[in-house]
Length: 270
Image (tube, rainbow, N blue to C red; front, side):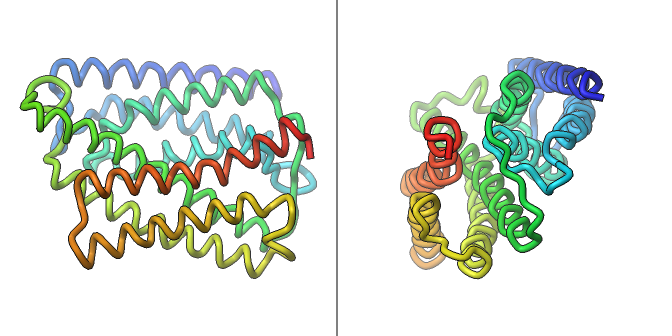
């Protein structure tokens, strides 16, 4: 069974890589457009995602609960990112995001395969599993918003330099990209709010020593996202300001979810 999961992981990572190569070729030939996304890339990515889900299920679903250790969390986030990418593939201008999401999924799968979890953290508590699931969904969605903000930064820079050929022609209009960014942030902010709220309810002490850094950093990120949404809908904030705040908030969120977990599990081993 273990050997079969290894083969699934390797095939999945290979398919993600192939889909990434096809996407790069399409961009070079200016064949990536909002109204005509590539079915070939979608099908290859879908097959890779199915194998990805199967391959990580054995390490995630343990007899004593769900394993939420560092590398499993990284794999789950990558899996959710690809799933969100596929769900919106034909309805939103997200195909170009595959330039980051698909190679990232391949890399994380290989890391997850060859660097097994050192510490096993499992839980059978339903309330804790709900809290962690909300956190994963919020982090994954806000990761997409960060990727979208990076693309907006590149697009804005190229437009200001009057470079309208090549990569920029594969992107939807700037206004459409920005509109999608705020839709993603709004949903992600709601999920992050639910995650923090459930943490205060379900966890005995959300400010305990081993959680305080994660909690404080998450709250800082939540405040920045809230200010950004308020400024956008009240005062029309957009452009460079929205990109800067989005990436700043995500930096705090990334440190909360992975920075503290990396230090606790792999360095301090607590």
